[in-house]
Length: 409
Image 1 (tube, rainbow, N blue to C red):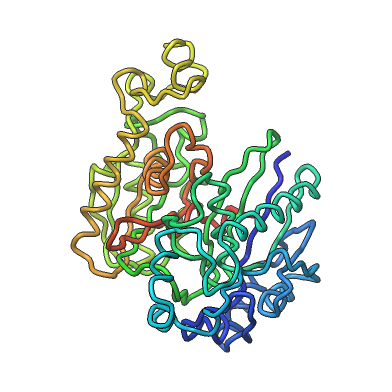
Image 2: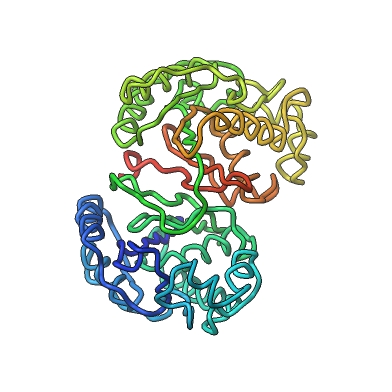
């Protein structure tokens, strides 16, 4: 059975509140952070953890205290930022010329003369490996830690460089789940779930328009295990309930778009009714085309064209599905164009679109610099789950993935 490690960033501190870098120094939890802890405590009711570990810094230990009795471990501390501690980014830029720019470019520096970033990455990877090794089959560890640590583990899991990594920092008290399969393969099952919060300011990271991407609720084709693609099937009663539950924690939006297929239109109608927003159909968000494999099960597709099936799923060649459908990369490019189009008319706002599992994963993996061969570092998003990107001046960055608290029981 798979193991999971759930990473939770500490609650907002007084330094977070005013945008000051903390590193391995400490800062008390702000009043808003205490509200976040109350929300986190309510969120975790009934949540099982076989191991609870925390960075030994007080902001992490205080956060962990609302979950249970945590084991303190200095290996999970934030990276040491030396002379940067207590400064804002503007002050660092002025007093340490060139350092902040080098840090943001992903150079292997020691910020403010503190911890070398490569050494920090190795420290965190070692701590993560150790906690995974301590878990039995099917067990879950919860680690309360820091934004930089979660950033490093994301980079390690995705197999990309520590910096620059195209994602926003985790929100305070948000959870990120790393799943470890029976074969040891790791994937980011959930990133940056902060749905228990009503206010999630970002102290660091790019500003821009946020685009929420919802996968439709369970359809009859999903229930039958069919590759639906452009073939349509209605939502099941369970699917409608999933979307209704997702709507309860859906963030306010200014506009709502949807793939034109019936299962997404029905999903958009439920979400739109809950948020008081009408939906507009946009063909850019339609599901990846499976060509001749449309509406087949996996077994049926393998029999229909065994050579193509082998080339794609055994040799990892990203060929058009069913020979006359789309490739994974083509679907990602199409969704990226649709996201750019709908975000173009909204400055620093929040809009949403309802799409499909393969289409959303193809887009998100391309944002993160992954390929078809490395796509499994993200799972297919769950029915009715929320994924988000933020459109920064340099392009989209990941803000959340596969968030569905109503599916976590």
